[in-house]
Image (cartoon, rainbow, N blue to C red):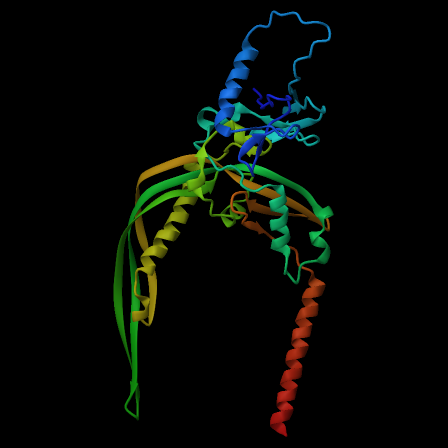
Length: 366
């Protein structure tokens, strides 16, 4: 499998994408390259590498930079880092990763080419420091959260991942049928009367949907991915491999046809809500939907890589997972509960309520 990386033209260091400047940056010398220039630069370097070098240099001449070594062990592809010798595993969905020991970036162009080449990418706007701050804010104010849970030592892993998403668009036409009632009550002094009028309502509608996101990775939790939405798709740019440098990236392992059902359910829920909200419910005593039918046309789909920060926190031999939108900072995750604090607060509230009831009883009995 081919391997790709971007080298600094000044010092030969590894270029990585900087979310603050939105440029490729060399951590060694600070040199920066615009994203629209890196492709041209890479093509020049590749062209030079392909030419045969017939010049015999002196003994003290500089050696050519070392490359990642690739080997297969027990059916797994292992990449050996040229900088530190560390070994990196890559599975079938890995499109980009980095050395666990020295952070040297590794891009696998074959995983983002052909049918797997994304149409769009939203570059990371927030870095790992932003993710840590968002995590601390997410935990702040949670009274039942164990005090030691937020300790930095418990944050075992934090990584930025470009997650594969399908973005669906379509035109939806449909009809909703609803039951409604109006009730009128009056009295003549002797009897109370109630008049109930029944109505059958229908609503027809036509809505255009664009960029409905569904993650195309089996590994990523669908609930988490939906919880950190929305992504601002209007800020997406045409895909370039340079954006992956320094981050992890995955290619899809769920095809667009497999994911359409999930997109359809989301579209149906939104479309049904639009039709229901078009009813002037305040005019009726009650309104309930019988259901609706919908048809889809003008379907479109785009393949995109969207930025997600993943944080893993270990507490009492259990791993807690959190995800943050790498563009907006929205965080999702499940926090543990300190049950001792829970019962302390519960019993305290119960005791306080019991005392108030006792005092009120004494007042009314005196």
